[in-house]
Structures are given as structure tokens and as C-alpha cells.
Image 1 (tube, each protein chain N blue to C red):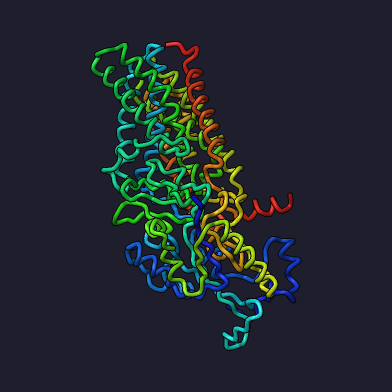
Image 2 (image 1 turned 45 degrees about the vertical axis):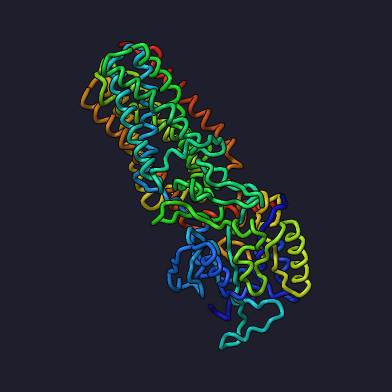
Amino acid sequence: MERFGFFTDTSVCIGCKACEVACKEWNDVPDDLVGWAGSSHDNSVGLGADRWRHVAFIEQPVPLGDQQANFQRDGGDFRWLMESDVCKHCTDAACLDDCPTGAIFRTEFGTVVVQPDICNGCGYCVPACPYGVLDKREEDGRIFKCTLCYDRLGEGQEPACAKACPTDSIQFGPLEELRERAGDRVRELHERGVGEARLYGEDPGDGVGGAGAFFLLLDEPEVYGLPPDPVVTTRDLPETWKHVGMAAGALLAGAVVCFVGTRR
Amino acid sequence: MSAEAPRVDGGPEGDDRGRRRKGGRDRDFPREDHPGDSYYGRPIINPPVWEEREIAGYLFTGGLAGASSILAAGADLSGRPALARGSRVMATGAIGVSLLALVKDLGRPERFLNMLRVFKPTSPMSVGVWILAGYAPLAGAAAASDVSGRLPRLGRASGLAAAGLGSTVATYTAALIANTAVPAWHEGRRELPFLFAGSAASAAAGWGLVVAPRRENAPAVRMAVLGAVVELGAERLMERRLGMIAETLREGSAGRRLRIAKSLTAVGALTAGFLGRRNRPAAIAAGAALLAGSAFTRFGLFEAGMASARDPKYTVQPQRERLREREAA
């Protein structure tokens, strides 16, 4: 089957958080608002077990393309970056590789989903994820994250967040089509003078084999709390196993040395 | 936020585009509220949800168990009954504590057996569970046979098999923590297995020095010295490898723990080496220092990983560096 995903175009995000609300409503994700986080209009802090969409707010003294903000009293430049973050549904997903129970699997839509009836809350996927997506719901003990609305996809519906997004900042569709659309959008923005527009996660040659949910950003990824060069940790696992094997062998060989020629 | 901040990257008429291509950065105004070029200083990865007591404790007890089985097998084959029995009993106790800690740390402990639904070489935790499933009964059988005196041949065979598997019990945990996005652990993936092997050997030797009479403790003395040298050497190499991430091994509570660990391990190994064969109380003291040193090493490395996960700069800066190198190449 065709692979589906998200293209989140942050250049048209207005920070309304409809995606956060729709996600919580549809997926019955518990309320866990922390109150104002003291970082612009952010009140949900970051992705986690109870936040499958997170809208980031960044304030910068930078003009946005040809827009006139006239926002500050002194008339200085200002732009607001807003970005609705979500699970990346990686091609090479570290959470899926690391899950020891098989609770995390890849669906027929190419998305990555945790099965709550199998997850035993070992927590290995949490530090495996290079984006900090998965987390443990403490009162429950299991791990939760975005399912890309697996239940809705099965019924031919788009995910709740994309459905609710009033500006089409969140676009859902076949990944190939989204990549084409995103490329066109970047070119358009560049022509309109927004030279800083760039795609993040769309490249199948990146460290996670390309994200199933990718983004159009207006600044470096880390400004939005995204890693600049994420790599699936299991890419290095063969090397790690090799060193474990050598160390285990060295331990046995060293032990032999400890006994050779010892008199009693 | 100040309007005086230098204006850069202002669109088509901006003069910054060359700079962006050159330096890979598009702005350079100060970001007081974004330390480490991050989103308000928040972690990029989610730090592990593992409890320190259970998981750092397991890194220690697992290593102690695995290496104790190896020491026990050697003692058995070379006719050192007290060292063999003490090490076998310790291996069984330590792996028992390990299993309890691992189950307790699950969010849903009653679903522990879900671990045995699948075998996944891509998941060191899955591989580890299967290793433990094979190892624990063998270690237990060896100890039970030794203590009860029953089925001595089966006991010896179990002990030898436990020694073989014990080498992986003591080292796979390095892959367990290295196979994450935690900077201090992942970047230490080449050295951690040797560090853990050395730490496990010095811990098992430490216990051997505590339980074995002088006439039996020569191998334990050697293992103590060898283990300590490997542990300290591997840690040094790892520190060099980690670059700026090595700060997490030196600073804060991780740094304190690792300094204590190094002192205990060095003192324990020196005492064992010079006095362990001659003086029983000195051997016991050396053994205790080595056990404590190994535990401090594991708790220190655990905390170093947590610290490297909590501060986004340890995630961002090495990745930025990598991108710069790739761009330059």
C-alpha cells in the first residue's frame, strides 16, 4: 500500500492549537496542560505521552519575508515562528527497532504505531527516539505517541489534526505527493523573498531514512527543538555488537590469564 | 528581545545569504532565552524514564553476576572450592536481584512475559532478556548443586555454560544503553563494552577476595588488577572520544560519582595486588573497595547519560559539528 504521512508547513501556522485539541479529543489523550510555560504562547511544552501534537512558539527580532509586523512599540522587526510538532513516523524508526516486545509496529500505511495491549512500559523506545517523541504515561505505565490516527486512516479519513487545521499548515496525504508539494512550496517562498524557508525530514537520504512526517521550517531545526542531524541509533548497532563481542571474548580470555600458572 | 540585535537574513535584499552558505548558520543574534541553540533550553530527546536504583543498579549487579560465573568456573576447574562456591552463590543472588529490578522498573510489571513474544537482534533489550533467560537458570543450577552437593557433574556443566553466557551478561548492557539517542552513551558505544567488562571483572574479583581464603585467591587478585586496568583505561579512551560530551563525565553528580569510582577502583586494585595474597583483612578491604568502585562507575555513567540527555547542547552541538564536517567534505 501507498505510504502516508504529514507535511507540516510552518510558514502558514497561526498557532491556534486546533491540532492539539483535535488530537486530544479524537484520541482521548488526557489533559495535562502545564499552564503558561513562560516561553511565548507555549502551554504544552513538548511532545510526550499526553501531547501527540505540540505547537512551538518562537519570537525573533527578524522580519518575515515582505510582511510588516509593526508589532513592537519601537517599530523593530519581529516575527513569530509557530510549528506544530508531531511524531516523524521515520522510515528507519529507532523506537520500532528497540521495542523488545513487538508492541511497536509499522502499519500498512507506513506509519509507526504502539499497540497499547502489548506495551509493557519498559521505556526503551523513549531514549531511542532522536526527536524526543515517545514518553511514559506515569499513571498508566505504558508508552504513548501519535498513531497518525490509525483508526481514522482505516476508515479513509484524514488524521484529526490535519482535519482541524484551519490554514492547511498540516497536510496529510501520500508521502510522495506531499514531498512534491513541499518542494513547490519552498520554491514559491524563495521567490517571494523568504530565503530561509527549508524542508526538514523530507530527504530519504537522511539519518532516519526520511521522515513520514516532515516540515517546512523558517529557521534552523534546533530553534524549534528539533535535532539538526538525527540518526537512527540502530544504524550504529552492528558496530556496537561487534565491540560487545570483542569485550565478551576479552573477558573470557582475561579470566583464563588470571588462572594460568597460579599455584595453590 | 532587543531591537538593537543585529538584523540578518532579511530576505532577498539581505546581505547574509553568503554567510549562511559559508557558515551553515543564518543568524547570529544572541539568544539569551535559547541556551545552546535550542527551544527555550528544553531537551531535544526525552530522557530515559528508567529508575536509577533499578537500572543503574542492574548494570552493576548484572556485571557482577556474569563475571562471578566466569570466576567460579575457573575456580571450579582449578580446584578452588571456596572461591567457586562463593562466586556461584553471588552470581545467583546478583542475577536474582537484577531480574527483580528489571521487572519492577517496567511500567506494567505483570506484562513482563511480553518480552518473550519475540526475539529481535535490533533490540539489545530483547537480546538481553533472552540471554538472561538462558543464563539465570544455569547460574542458579550451578549454585544449587554446589551448595547442596547434589548432581555435581550437572552442576559443573551448568557452571561452565553460565560462565560462557556470563561474558555476554556482563557486556551486552553496554549495547543496551549505547543503542539510544542519549549522547554520552551512544557516542561511547565502542568503549562502553570494555569498560563494563573491566568493571564487571573487578567487581567479581572484589567479591572473590572477600570470600576466598588466601590459598585460593590468586586468580581473584589477578582479575582485580586486570579488571581495574581495563575499566580505568576504557573510561579514559571514552572520555577522549566523547569530545564536548565528556563534560557530562566530569561535571555534577556524575563527575563526583566517577571520581569516587576511580579512586575506589585504583585503591582496591593496588591493595589487592600488593597485599591481597598475604593479608586476609587487606584482601577483604580491597574487595569491598572494588565492589563499591564498580557500583559507583555504573551509577556515574548512568547519571552522565541522563545529564547529556537533559541538556540540548549535547544533542545539538555534535550534530551541528557533523553537518559542518559533511558540508566541508
